[in-house]
Length: 180
Image (cartoon, rainbow, N blue to C red; front, side, top):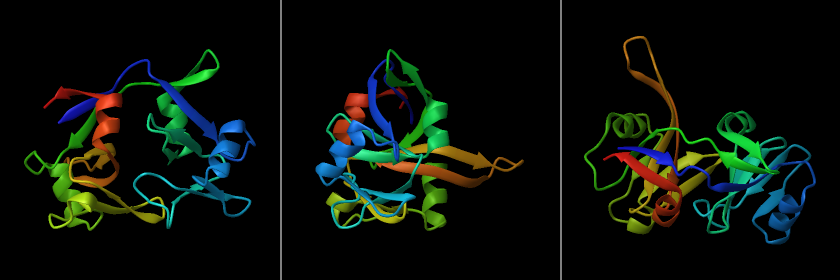
């Protein structure tokens, strides 16, 4: 399946370590914790409240429409967002995606074979499981697996990838399907 972020949606985000109001708010709410001078822990929907995702000073934290923060590496954020009228807007680009209702894709098979992802049919609330951003993340069976970056060798074989999960409610609010 190929999906794209809906165009024109405003993005709530801040760069970590710049002492901005959003960072202070997330810290007060317990959704962001400064660990050291160079590191943060971001408590996302997928990480839960026991161990957050790791981010570094200079990385960005975005807040989804449901109020949940998640980290984005600085180079990825800056390449995929524009500053407009004092706020950020994401630059839409097509992404490969997979849901549990679809047949296994090449990308899914690779992630499973490499041990980067597991699927747990016995636990639909934590169906997707992967170690990402320095912690184990899970998502329910109805979440969408988004492949943000897929690297291939000269023969077209997958050699590396970046992916993450998007819960269904966030997906329907923020994305649209280009090709089923």
